[in-house]
View 1: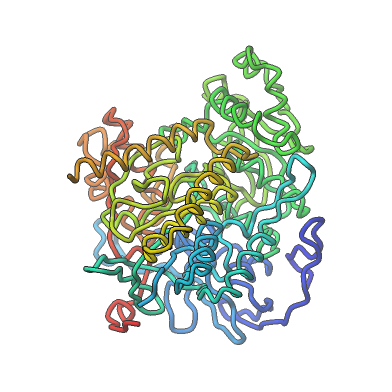
View 2 (view 1 turned 180 degrees about the vertical axis):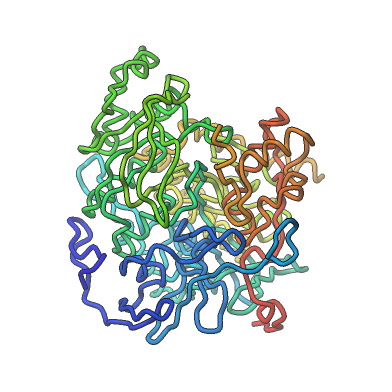
Length: 111
Length: 405
Length: 91
């Protein structure tokens, strides 16, 4: 389990061997480890972009990592707006990034 | 009915839980994070005597004690509302609603933001986020980053990133605007670091101790601050450079940095691009008080404590019946102080619920003394005038009671 | 100078320029500033920008920080589904 992870640490010691957990992010198959949050597993796999702003489409990733800012919200299976930083990955979990939504009632927009 | 519900399984919450359980009370602790320990989990620093303060180990000890004492610690549970009923509190969580005789809020602190252009880009995170990712999840936040915001918290966490083998190329001030201006001024930043330097272990903040030499010449020190920064743990700390913008297409690619004058105003001709694949924003901490606010508890704004704090006394009691507070919700201090405050809250609750026991009163008094001792010996002090902040909030408790009568 | 590019409320993407302009023209409270601009009304419930909105109000109106919390909190203070809110399970 090397990719993106801090295996050896001078004070905290070596990372324990953990069970692999298979999950998907926008249909890409990824591997994380038992007990990891969605946010940690995605970052370790090099995925920094978790969603885009529903209206402007600007990209977002992890910001506070402790459940306050809601920036890391993703869709998990049928559940919408799940905080990736507080949710532990499960075998077979289907994670989807948040997408831009239509704004049909916004003034001055043609679409 | 539960005797005590504690919101927050950090140093204060777990310490309180263990004291209550030792006194025979039925205790439940809930926390939003998937592991108990709260902010202890990320902490790692060298003490003045050369030993390491390892927050993960401290959290483990507290959790093991809690388990032995049959404290129900439930993680991954969010409290979304609390209501006071006639003789109890009702606590609404994402995993059911509960009734409790006493309610302790130990919700800790949240981070202050330093908004600058580009801070919404993926790859920009709060410094606390990087700390949790590095020390708790053991996942690399990037290869080479910069830290924006120079304060005791950012210095300590930057050191933790380095220990984990993550390169931080520089620490900078935030670009100055109406909301970042206090953190963007070289002189006030240096002064705040100076004030903590005398209390901090020399290895923790060499920057501060370096400036101690200039105590009488601080503004001169800022004026002649080296252009290449001063190295702390081999990393340049720039008191005369600020990040004006974070840039990148889909994620962070770097920062635009410029020299600033002694007031923090950028000298635009000096603007340079510094590559980075992550950026940490370090604006400091403020007490997280949402639940206290919806409980109807009165508040005071006390800058020395980090912002708005619920009114409480030395026993960690609020003026609201059955509602207690401990830890950083009462003001920003180190985890060691939070642990001692938690014990005070534990004895205080035990005394109120088990009215007959006289021993507890002595233990409560001792616990209050432990808080003071720990505060006086603290190696990390977030605010130099913490004592006056504490006096103000305790005085406000007395005034609240007076106006009630 | 860069205020139009500086986002204060990340959820609703309200810029520093908009907030300062609104605070200066209406010389209003934090609550009114929030209602006029939507800053603090997004998914995070203002947890990231509340202190910033308060400080803009204070600086634009030259007020000192009041002891009462300027922007009130309302339950639920965490995102919950309607099914959780509707549940009636006591223990």
